[in-house]
Length: 69
View 1 (cartoon, rainbow, N blue to C red):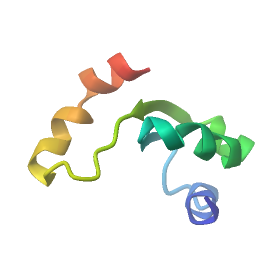
View 2: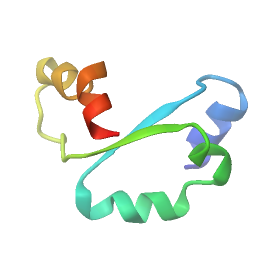
View 3: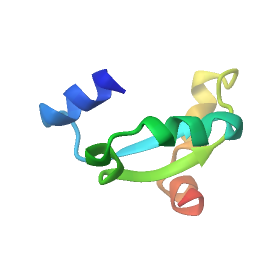
View 4: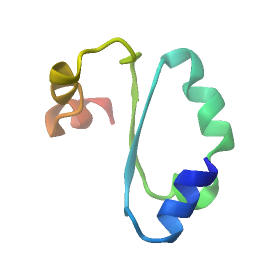
């Protein structure tokens, strides 16, 4: 979280999407600082660890993110 917090403070992004397996989403949310919670666009509760790169776009498309919100 520290590195993400520094990137946000440096204005490297203004919103982000949390993508993590359902089992760890709660753990991650507990350590997300308030400043980052304010710019958290949505959470995708999926384990995409073994998803081929060429398939990631379908999971992270605007439509998929809208459905995940």
